[in-house]
Image (cartoon, rainbow, N blue to C red; front, side, top):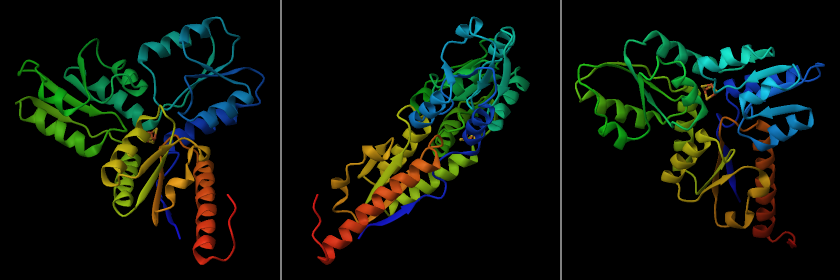
Length: 297
Ligand code: F3S
């Protein structure tokens, strides 16, 4: 019989839950509601909000000509200049930037005399937002060990290092160590969100003792991808799914211990659905093993 364990930290984190709640709480007002980009990297949530009239706007310029309403800024945050631009369009603005991301904006603003090193993915909206709080072009984004090794800034430069909230903590420590050896005067701020660290640690420990791991999350969710990488390194039978329908149950026939975790943008009801499907599978398997009834596929 399958033994299924769900990671305690799986699913919506505080910041995403807060942002999603803010959108739902504003549904029903007479004015239109816009989110700047999808509020979470989860298709089901975004589809549900669309049915309730929430419009996702990808290009802020579009908001100039849209009927006056409320713009909700998602947990990733946005560059400072964009706030000013949005304010000039006459919409009401609700800022759902996660407080932990906001803290990074404040750090890089305060440390503007130092050259800011942002550790993370330069294409991720959170990093684009952080860049927009740095002084002019006084920053460098690095995303891996190779880029840290190749960092070649003048040695008299004072540095301030921050990280994307969802960055891998162990890799961040390695990068900081590499940069420290180059002899710069450095301030390091570990801005990796503790929810992310706990989730990654728990996923790692669960993957170590599981025959198979299921990682649930949106295909564009960088924190889910990192969870997948961590689990895959410990458990080769790791499956990345977005919803229960993506599960191929036949793959789980030979496993005993299955672990489930989920990215920060995955609502708890999807985790429950996956668990239900897996539990049903487990029940069928038990019946098959005990030869109690014949199961017709
Ligand atoms: Fe915020 Fe941490 Fe979530 S930074 S958005 S609580 S992963």
